Every structure is written in structure tokens, then in C-alpha cells.
Image (cartoon, rainbow, N blue to C red; front, side, top):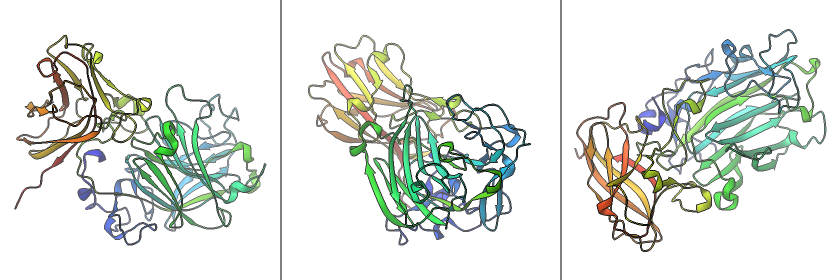
Length: 463
């Protein structure tokens, strides 16, 4: 089941692979749980079993299948290098010149062939949006990296990519905790690392286990080392470089960084050792996919199975040709968003030429049981806007919500609008939302509205 439609209080009933209930484990950065963190077991793991939980993790290279890439040449990810022992996940790098390497590296890589070195990577099959990530790891003591990072729609967050031993150049990276963000939007610069922060450590990362943490906020990051806050950055500082507003899948891997030197046969094998990964989130009653209904990125169908490409299952808001003259999704440069970096814009410069204009969410993006609900969204209305009402329809089963009167909304500020409604039948598989502005509710003239952060939560029933 897609995490985005699964309340966290239900997730808490699940246990980790080790059998320890989620509520018993608290962040090292917040041992008293003052922020009411709740562990998300779908993307957390104690690695205490005898074999990796492959319902939770995709192993790069298994059955010669890879997601996104095969590793940085000359090394290649190989499934036999992923093992659990002594309560640890061990990603091993080995000297194996006779290994049956698959394919050739992308042209942009520094080395032109996979050879001699096998290593390892795993990727979470579930994604998450915002929260606190914590891992306890020991970096391999060789010219190999230990990395914990996440990929999502046009974005990448490297919580860390740490080298154990530098053979070429400055040895500072051996004792530096670095977090960075990459921009994968179309047309991005070749050097797409848009933010990076290095934190100098007291010793080498390969000398001992350390606890690395990053709190991922809607508008920034906080870096933690062994439970201590070491750096913060926010969207206001980063501007257009702040991209992390869509769900991430999580990676652990070990790679060669050729610019720091390539390990020799004598230096291998070596292990990247991972004690645990724990992801906490704060309670959220929203039953919609928050990134999609916040207009930050696509809706990703839960039918997607790794290693299938994310884009094969990505669906966007849809407007017919007439509606597209009035509805559009903004971007950061318009500077109109309640949160994130985007919103839905409606513009009208004359009388609407048709009875109504409509924005459609994808089929399957509404999943509601029977019950009483509250719909909310943020609205910005420019001065002199004439639009009187906004209409919302849920398609299957068909439900027309009461029109939302926006005529008296205070202009030039974000205002939260709310509407209770009752769902007498559960959503069908193709249920979706329509946002409608009717000709009768939009008098001739100039109007500009922005809609953001649509949410639906269940209204608790009195006992």
C-alpha cells in the first residue's frame, strides 16, 4: 500500500524486522521525543535478521537488474556483496576481475569500463516525504565511499557520501561529514550540485561507528552528528536551489571516487557497515499525497515496482485546451506558494468563453473510505479579482461538494479555506478530484487566484 494514503498511527502497529515496536525507538537527536516523532517502519530497518528483507529493499544487480545506474566505474554493484551478519548490513567491496560485469558506464563517467571491482547498493522500495533520518554506520577503510542518499522527482539529497581513505589529493574528506543537494530538473547545469555543506569531524569516518542524522523540513535541513546539531540551512537562504519537496527513495551504497584514487587488490575486501536506518515523521492526518496536492510534482502510482522507472507511473494535473488558457502550475520564480515552491494558478482577463474551466487530478489519486471529512486548501487572491466561488467534485463515486465562496477572502495573503463533507461510499479505484471555476461564478474582468496545499482529513466521530 502506498505510504501516502496510510495514516501513521496505523503504521505504528507494524514492527520492524527485528520485532521491536516502533514506539520504543527514539531519535538520538531528541531522546525525550519533544517533537512527537513517530517511527516509519516501512523505510526503517535494524538489520538484525539473517537475510535482507527484500520486500523492503531492492538489491542492485540482482538478476542483472539495476535501477538508475550500475555504480561508478570501474566498480559495479553486485548482489552477492549484500549480506547481514552480527546485527549489521554489510556492503562489501571486492577485487573480482573475473566477475561477469554488465554493460558499459555512461559516457559522462571518468572511467570507460566496469572492471576488477565489485561493490554493492540497496534501495528502499517505499518512499517518504519529510522527517528525521538517522543511521549508525562505519565507513569502509579504503579508497571507497559509504553513502546514504535519496532520489526523487528531479531531486537528490545526499545525506552523506564519505570516503574512507584518500589516495590522491587532500585527505580532508576522510574526516568530513558532507551533506549536499543535486538538481535534476530538465536543462540543469552539468555541475548540478546546487548546495553542499562540509562539517569537520574530530577523526576519520572509517575509524569508528558514528550516528549521522538529517532532519528534512518543508523548507530546510538540519544536520546532526552523534546526536548533536552541527548545521542548519533553509529555503530562504537557498532560493531556487531548494528542491526537496517530493518523496524520496533511500539508498545505501559504496562507490569508487576515481578523483580520490582507486583501491588496489591488496586493499580489498572491505565493508561498509550499517547498524540501522531509522526514519521518523510527525503525525499528519492528511489522507492525500501531499506533494502532488501541493502542486510540487507528479502523483506516482502505487503499481510501480522497482526497478521500473519512476516516470512510467508519474501522472500530472491535467487541463483540457480551453482550461489550460486559465489554469497552470506555477514555478519558483513567480514566488506564489504557501509552502514548497509551486501552486495552482487561475487567471482570467475577460469573460470565460465556456461554461466552466477544470483542473483534473489523475485517476486513483483520491482514496477515501466512507465517513465524514474536512477538505482544506490555501488560497491567495489578487486584488480586484472577481471570482465568487470554487467548486470541487470527487468523481467516483460522484460527489459534488458545496460551492466554496471566496468573494470575501482577504486579498494579497494566504488564507486557509475549509469545507466539511460526507463520503457515503468508499472511493473506487479511479477516483479523482476536479477543481472547477464556472462562468457564472467568474464575472467578466481580471481575476488571479492561487491554490496550494490541498488536504483531506477524517473528522473523528464522537463515541
